[in-house]
Length: 81
Image 1 (cartoon, one colour):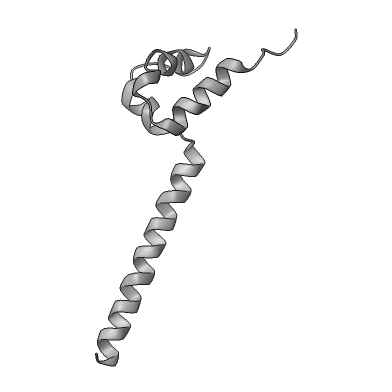
Image 2 (tube, helix red, strand yellow):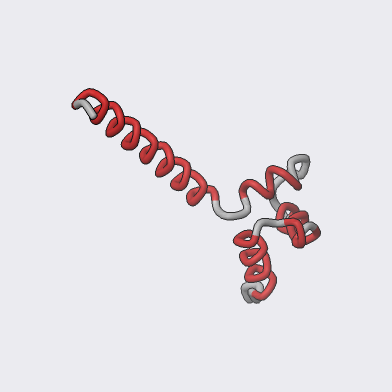
């Protein structure tokens, strides 16, 4: 393998790793339910628990990480008023 081919392969690997890291960071910053909320609740205005209610209604169809978050949210006690 020539030095040129080695360098081209190395650049490709580094660029691919950078793109994968950016995609993972973006998903992490949006949370595990972002894609499901966009998919199942796109016409629903945020606020007042409407998105959460929408996701709860579709819980069987959610990705596993989102479903776990929705379940945890349902187990939380509301703050005392």
